[in-house]
Amino acid sequence: METPKKIPSRRSFLSGSTAASAAAFTIIKPELVSGWAPSTLKVGLIGAGGRGRQAVIDAFRGDPAVELHSMGDIFEDKLEGNLNWLRQQAEKMGMSNRIQVKPDTRFVGFDSYKKVLATDVDVVFLCAPPGWRPEHFEASIRAGKHVFCEKPFGVDATGVRRCMEAARESERRRLTVVSGAQRRSDPAYTQTVEKLKNGDYGQVLALYAYWVGTPVIQQAKGKDARWGEFEWQHRNWYSNLWICGDQIVEQHLHNVDVCNWIMGMHPVKVHASGGASWRPQDEVHGNIYDHISADFEYPNGVRMSSYCRQYPRGLFNRVAEIVACSKGRLDLNQTPGGPGYVNEHTKLYKSIRGDGPYQNEAMEVSQSTLTCVMGREAAYSGLEITWDMIMNSKQDLMPKQGQWDYKATNPVPEFPVPGKYKFI
Image 1: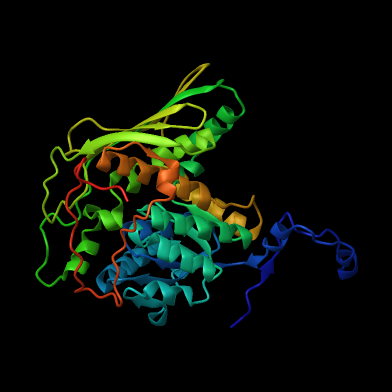
Image 2 (image 1 turned 180 degrees about the vertical axis):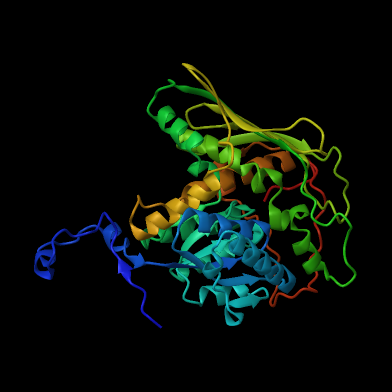
């Protein structure tokens, strides 16, 4: 097999036509060294669900020299079905040659992520349900891989802190990490946030974050008799707290992250309320809320009002942010067509190759994730939760198993009721 060519970044290119002239220069910045990369970047996908397969398509659209080489999922039907879907989409796009997944580079089972990381891929996409994110992110950084990491960065305080420590290590190793918080790559947001930080709109006085939408119900028909308890919870993951984190963490993070990004910091305390107005407490709908309202406060006294809910279709919807400034009010929303989904991949590969600025969003989006966990715990417990409290929380929702298997038992905790629910 021909050895992939190495291409220098534009930032690290040494002018001159001879080796002698190049030798006269000394590279002193670590980021210039990390700007060298194979001309074609190999991707490994961990979590072959709907978001994972779409991330691959977005990557193909975002860079002409990215190929999918490896896939892993705990379910064979998910992996094979979505691999076939990807092949069909790639053929329609005239990109069939960019699907290079061979029989020996697709893996099934709870340890499939380890096998993907053991292949020679350059970049991994972490698109499994978020309860697994800390485990997968830590392993990816240990393996020295660049990462596209879907949001959120965990579902509980213990897991998010693991991601924070891995984020620090990724920065030390100069690994690129881009998150699935795609508003950070949408020009409607990047341009506005830059103006806000430049003071064009004056002082930020208050923020409002909304994800008022519809429910995510993955298995409306209920549990298949062939599925064990653990398999059922994975196939119906959005309804289970330990693996989804509730809507405020799994989905509303997008809006909360925008507010933290604008402020350049995380809140220091929050009080909240919530519950389930329409969502039945059964095995299909699980043990999460269908609405949470939270009042966050930043260190400088600015407050963020946060609203998320998932009510049946046909009712009022709103997904947006409002920023009240001393020189006016800003209404923020995604650019039509959602260019952020593709742009996040373009900037990922530019960072790896050194063709653009170094990107590492891991710490900031981890902090936004923990902000959302803080809000959820305030709603569940009825307490005011501070940043120090959540940073010292012992909560760890990940089920403990010596050996994961599809038939494992994992009892569902009681529905959280303020006054009874205990903040740990």
